[in-house]
Image (cartoon, rainbow, N blue to C red; front, side, top):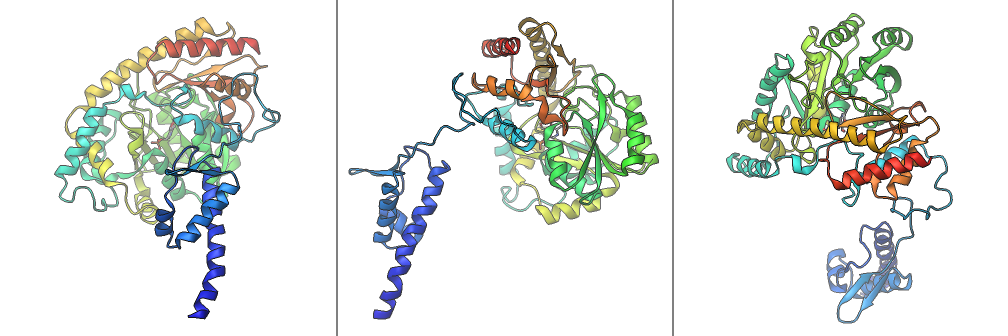
Length: 483
Ligand SMILES: Cc1ncc(COP(=O)(O)O)c(C=O)c1O
C-alpha cells in the first residue's frame, strides 16, 4: 500500500506539468482561443484519467504563466493574447521589421493558401466560384436523398473505383469532350489533386523529371516537388498554349518521364489549346511513349458555344490520364474528383488501395444523385453565363482602375485573369500591401520555380461583380500606381 502511494506521487507531479505543457501549447498555437472556457477541473480529471488535485495543479501552473485566468463561480478561461504575427492583417504603416526579408517559394505559397478561407477578406486569389453561384439547396437535398436511398445510409466503405451512379454520369458526360468512356474506366478520388498525385506516382519514381507548363498552378509544382520529382517548365504562350517544339527538344534532353499539363483553360494564363494542337501534343508524346497527365478541371467552364475537346479524346494508346473534379463546378468542399487513367488503371487502383482504401461515400453519392436529377446541365449553363459576364466586367474595371501599361489575359474560360504589371513592381510586395486592405491576390512568384513572373499577379473573377469588388480593384489600382 505504502509502496504504491510513494510511486504515485512523483508520477502525478510529473503529470500535471505534462498536462499544463500540452494545454499551454494548444493555447499558444490558438487551438484554444483567447476568451474560450476550459473544461472544469472535474471534467479535465475525468477526461485525462487524473486526480482532481493534479487537474487543479495543471490549471494553477497555466495561471502562473499568464495563459489562463480563473473567473469566480465560472471556471477557467484563456487569457493569452498572441503577439502580432505576419499573418494578421495590420493596418497600413504597421509593418514590422524583417517582413520584407526574402521569403521562400514554399512560404509564399503557404501564406497565400492560408488566406484562402479568411471570410473577412476580398478573396481575389481563389480560383473558384462564389457560393452564391453554386446550387447549395439542391446539393443539400441530393445529399439527404442519397443517404436515404442508400441501403447502408452511406456508412459503409465505397467500392475502390468509386460510386457507380457517379461513374455512370462521368462516363456519359465524357461524350461532350469527345470521349468514349465506360464507368469501369474511371477511378474516383478526393478532388482533382489526389487524382494528380496518383497519376504521378503511377508513372514516375523519385528523381524522375516531369514537364509542367510555365507558369502553372502552384499546387501542381508543390505536389510534383513533394513527390521527389524534378521539374522542367515548358514555355507557354497566352494564346496558343504550350510550345510544342520546345517540349519535343526537352523530352530528349531531360529524359522526361511524364507531362502534367492543363491544356483547357490553363491556370493562370487561361488559354485553351486548339483541337489541332491537342492532337499534335498527344501524338508527340505517344511517339516518345511519355504519359500525359491531363488536368481538365476547368474544361466545363467554357465561354464559347461548345465544350472543348480533351487530349484524352485523341488518345489511342491509353497514355493520357485525364484528371478532374467537381471543385470548380459544384462543391469544392465535397472533395469529389476522378481520373480516367487509360492503361495505368491497375496501378491507380493499387495506389488508391494503399493510400486511402476508398473515397468518402456520402459526397460521391450526393454528386451522383445530383447528376441523376438532370439539373447539372442547367446549373452549368447559368454558371458559365455568370462567369463570362464577370470575366468581362472585371477586365473592364481593371482597364478603368489600373495604370495604362498593365496587360491583361483574355481567357476563353475558367476563373482567372493573369495580369502583367510594370517590370519594377514586385508582385509579392503588392500582395502584402493589398492584405493590409483585406484584399488577397495571387502574386506571380508562386506560379513558377524561377523568377520570371515577379511582376505578374493572378486575379479570380469567381465572385459576382459588386461594390466591394469594385472598391477592391480601385484600391489595387491605387497601390500599383504608387510603386
Ligand atoms: C489546375 C488545377 N488543378 C487542380 C486543382 C485542385 O483541384 P481539387 O480542389 O479538385 O483538388 C486546382 C485548384 O485550383 C487547379 O487550379
